[in-house]
Length: 176
Image 1: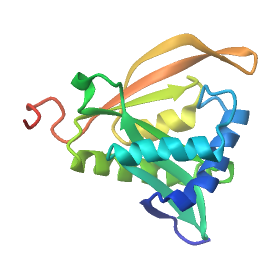
Image 2 (image 1 turned 135 degrees about the vertical axis):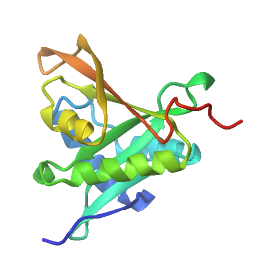
Image 3 (image 1 turned 90 degrees about the vertical axis):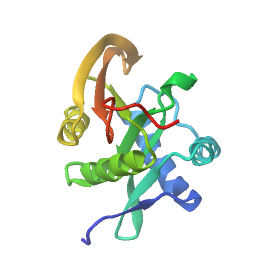
Image 4 (image 1 turned 180 degrees about the vertical axis):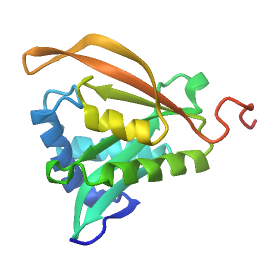
């Protein structure tokens, strides 16, 4: 097995991105979506992020996309314009191999280069130790937990809130 390549996502990557996300929706608690979006919807979401100038990366291993990560707006109101929310998903066969960490590191660097000052992680399921661990390893701090806010697979689920300063964070005013 070769080393994973992290590169900007292309529209041609979206069929595999859609498969990875569909698996997470159907079998996991990292996302609170209940019905996997189809390729057309995933393309619409991708295009909205591209139109907004947000970073979106894929990890390619042995010629196939095995994971992806992107940042998008944290909230739509203008006061949040220097804050992004991240997402990272991996194919189930690739968990615990450092690819999520590589994707997060690349995503953080790209967000810092774009002048963002804070990154928020909203992690589905407080038992999601892998995601929480990757976020801790990339400098995120625990902000809090919203207990029992989602209901999936016949049980209540928490969301874990984590945050990381980007670049100068709040130590200086943003430009302009």
